[in-house]
Length: 432
Image 1 (cartoon, rainbow, N blue to C red):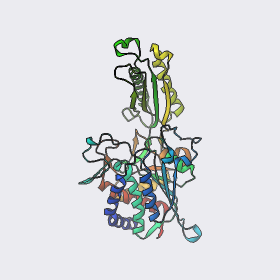
Image 2: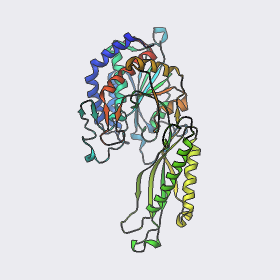
Image 3: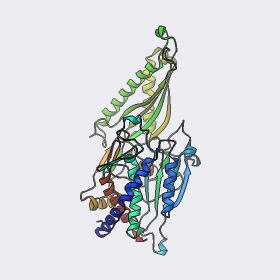
């Protein structure tokens, strides 16, 4: 059972800091931290860590050898010398000095955001957060900069209450969560370990029990360019791509048919999603296109290996190409570029979950619920590859990857308290 007096003290501290936390989140959202441009945001967070007295490790992904590790996702078209990662270490005194009374903890969030799309289609500018009633608008405010603010200000709540964690805490802000997961993996490759990890993704105060795996790939198709006046004598790479996409949608349907018997996903309608997300092709409006590239995303079920899932994609593309006279002799390429992410499943019964359930119930007045996700989160890196119990649990919001994304501020406030209570119970506390 959570310590009611401690939670009351932390609640007063969260309340005292609340206006500053909201303003802090607005500053964080103003950084347009799309892929490749996260550096200024991360540098600001590094300064925020240093101002709190935490030891700061700022590095780029180009400095870390990871390609040999399980969980690594291949990349192209990306300069990792610009991919800044930050870890703030909050040390507790050694056991002989009266510290280290609890268990160590990683708290982690990503600051990379997806592109906003046409800004004129937003109600408010995507990187100028506006507060309207209980909501804050802005790209990344929901997914997941509000979660980053939750653990920063949970740590501040402890300090305001005159307390500090009695075991080591590693505060991590990473990039690449939206495309590879290599940011989270880099912290592990760099040697950071703890007794548990808490990733404050926007889960509306529920625990992610499991999520699908995800693969990204690029379809590269060739054609024969001719004047459109004699189009039937050439081939159209864009239309050939369309045929391949139809077959990949068919593969997705077959996987979802299998999912109806899956022990984790059987209660969900079509848990595996396929999406052709970016298309490029052709050189001239009056020429049949000689080339086409389509960047795709497809999910996979827990229990299916990445190798098995990749082979299904390759087989589907090869079978579709055989039915086309040109593609049969000029087979499309499949290039694995981005997410090669295994599915995640957190078994019930861990001590970390027990503590989170107790603190959640004390703060929310109801039992902790869990859910299964059709997306991915960084928790898989900690649990799947390094055996660290990993909890995905954070505040509420709306519109991830959509126009008018927004964070629910009352939910963030309560979740900040819940995270602070979890840190206190898991790590123990000492006088600051």
